[in-house]
Length: 469
Image 1 (cartoon, helix red, strand yellow):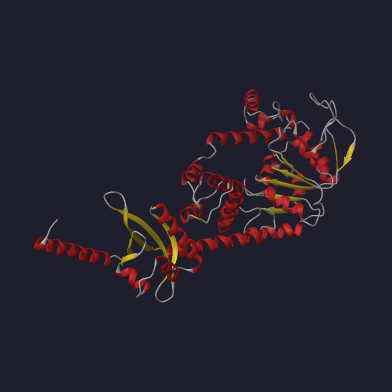
Image 2: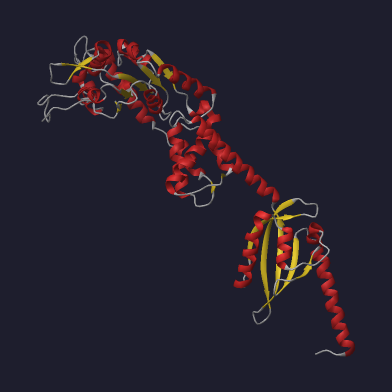
């Protein structure tokens, strides 16, 4: 152990190092505080001292009570006690009062300093001003709450969420036509929510207490669609072992929604026309007419006037269903609704999954806003549900690769060509009443050999008989 002059030299060197340490620490804009082993403050740098402006040294508990926001004080004290008992470090976010009375958010970090034997001899405290970040988070939370309140106000139309002018025009038309019994034709791209529009009309009609029956005409095989809609008698066809009630009978007194009505085969179009004109129908294989007190709401993503020109859709049926048209805008046409929809789906799926998100990652929201959404609201809903499933943080974020893949994955050109070919053949068969060969046959119209047309009909699974009226 050094003594005499040598000891003074060591002491002077230690003091010099301490002064240099204090000068370095005082130049740091962060709050840096040293506490002794029992949490009594032994040193605070300039940034810390000037922030609080305290002249007297306070006990740890008194310091917390004096400087901490009343809403954070109990939590802060409990955290400090726990850290002292556990003898380990940690961090906490609290609001601390500045000398002028203003409170600011700080990230308070505590680190133990141990001697060579592992005993804690000091604690180092650093405080980082995070007030701006916290205020941004609070603003985001308030915006989220505001969005949720807005959603609550505008979601009176079931799950139709939005405030954009195009959507408000649709809601106004719903309000006008709902109390009547008029037939409605809803048009719009796939995934725009045409069935939601139909359900909203039904709910606000005098038929709301009766059934709402939805039929996707494109999902039912063409040789079964008539039976599905109007029912069949026992023995009407192979496999008809008993009488079957159709959807029109099930919807008696209520509303039937015929989605993708443009896919109906020709003979079923005739039967539907009879329902709209005469308010009656006959089961497949039956002879007795059945009265139909049913409101019809139809929907399609196809251009029906073009289908009429092509001969695949009857003009008289079109004018019967085109009494009150409602065109549903695509998501691209109502981009200002996207944030509301995103929040709506986040709330919906997070509630189901027991998750909570404080806010939405701004970058994810920007990416969602810039995406073209070819699948419209249905695609948005699927992307949000998938994101809620995989997101474990309290900030909702998006895996952008899903949108990139979604924008690349489109219907192959070969499929598009086959669909167009199928439509042309069906239009020709409709005009020739199912006849392939002969002077007035479809083959002549399409300028191809009858054998070639027959092979294409088989390959495309077209039922010639459905066009034989």
